Image 1: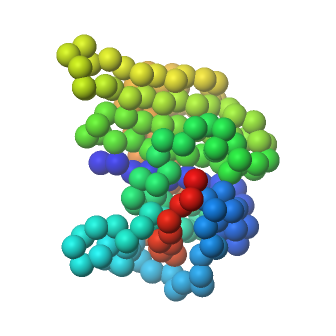
Image 2: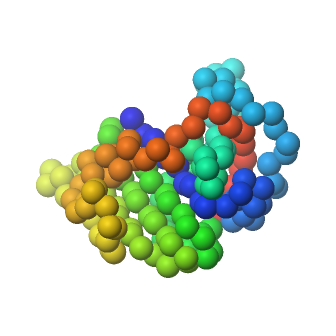
Length: 174
């Protein structure tokens, strides 16, 4: 599995505008809300390739959730997430159990509260681990030691999944 999402505590209209500005892309057009089961068919071409970077955007309570289907949000430095978060609460979380990696970046009031990044390098015989571990959460998930704790965080996050939303296919500049 490789779920990936960013959620920000903003109304969807403001979150869409910020996401567009942050990626240097046009804001999402007025799309009809669809069910998640239809999103993948619409996001892929006839050969099964992504038509572009793809986010499934939903409102969950006070949060706007961007479920990242195509990996467009991966490998962004914490400074980039700070630009997106500004002074709002934001959570970026993802894991990939096939390449053994995970990221968790959390901002409250524009301040980095938690950054955990894990990558197991299988390219050499030593199988080295790369870990960034900064800050702490007041959470049942701490301490984070590997990608497994991030996976647990993602899988238990009630605000990290929605089955209804808007499909946004885009080509990020950044």
